[in-house]
Image 1: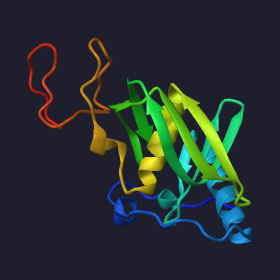
Image 2 (image 1 turned 90 degrees about the vertical axis):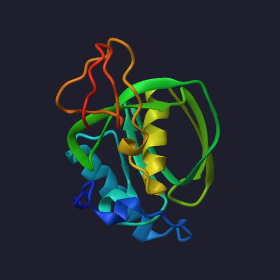
Image 3 (image 1 turned 45 degrees about the vertical axis):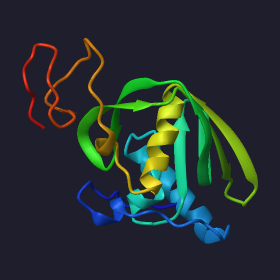
Image 4 (image 1 turned 60 degrees about the vertical axis):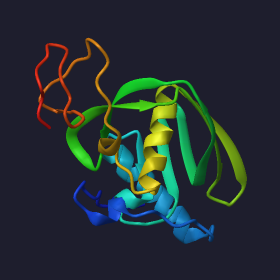
Length: 173
């Protein structure tokens, strides 16, 4: 396993749509292993292949005691709404509020090409949606939402264009 460089927000690769994985071989297994090691080393909870410069539909997620490797993931159902603070390894040191579903059901394949279905609830649903967005060239900053009433906002929080604070002050982005 090897650490890979994580691309940063201004890299045009992050804005491209990833291609479907069709070969489930050692090259894919090395990629998934490297992505997982890179994510853990960077204190992340999720990483998508485009973030390490590979335009293939693969993500890894480390959530508590559960490790997920999803190849060609697709959200097949979703429910609910939550607005949570998100960060991204490709946008270090910043965060922002994004509205996501509270429940997602995803069909994907594992590293061997076997069809699998996974469920994400609450923060895990956020993580799955965030990483799948990367596969479509979308970053969380493209989906910024107004912070919930009373939410903590500091100099590291990105806000949607034209956001007005609850104190009536227009906040620049």
